[in-house]
Image 1 (tube, rainbow over the protein chains, first blue to last red):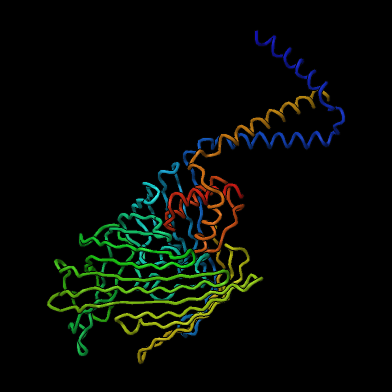
Image 2 (cartoon, each protein chain N blue to C red):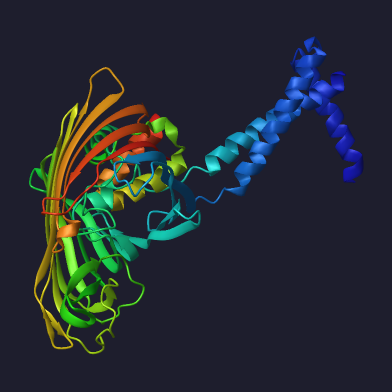
Length: 405
Length: 93
């Protein structure tokens, strides 16, 4: 039945179209172009159909940077640096839940490729003022680590001393957070509170001056405040940040962490004897306090951030480890030169460590060219100084191309 | 030749209809629409707290959804600010 009707319908339709449209004026080339366009349109429709269900969305964002580093350290050569590729994957189901993950992929000095998990969280949108963030997250302490560290956002080609993977400011943790924002009178406020596995502590053994196999003293070496997939001491930490914006251009934040952390490893190779056992040692108190301020107008962007981390006393193998603190701060002014794509930046930072060799006072100047708002060419010069007698910090010049996508 | 042209026109019209229906189908029905004007202000006030402003035309509507929700979590935006900013960006791209 249908075999006999279909040709009839086609003929009828063809006759109708032929009467209605001035088709005979088509040139052969026009016809070919039209055929190609129709073929393309069919493909577009096919592609669109494959993604018709919009309940789930997937998107990749992220950033990358490459550059060149020159320094006055005679033990280090100037180098092109492969930089970092940091893709951020978003997978979202409606407005209820989002999976976020950032990887940091870079080329090491020996040519190998390193891959690190910056964060991996499942964000449950609970209501208009609260999101549950569970998994491995960037530390919400302060502002730089959680919001400003991506290279296309950071206005200088390096992090201030103590704010990178090297010092006083915690980097990440594994646990859960509650985050959100709300209006407070005529002001805006935001918050983040979390519980996590917390950091681990490294200790250093100082050998006796006359015998490297004999312990003279044991002291804290550093805080490893990057996310640990297991809690070595079972001691959790609790912390967060509260930010308030009295006016939209001014934000003031205060941060804290409270909890306990335990020495889990030793650093250094000067001591050649047997390390005292770390089994059963008492956990130390671990407290962090921070403050950050940012202000901006059309051309200026001004930031200040301070963080102090303190580890309380303990005892290892009969040796007392005294309460120790690390602190760092920076102040930064960026000025976007009107009617140009240039931006000038000045930053001063002071990192204090219990180990004089790691102390650093840094003045950094930078000049940026904003090719676009998310593609920035940066030139920076670090003047580094260690204020302790006999210690040296080396200056550096850095060139960086940073692209956010 | 005439018959071919007719088929071509028919195919074009059919394809156009399908394309329109497909594009309608891929428009997400969430979150609920916000306020365009408030969104423009919230976009200008909040995004520059950390980074340079991004052009609304850089991303498609669906890409803006994931991007703005990411920024909601990161920047401590309220749900209403999120919807307002998203409406502004989706209507400006």
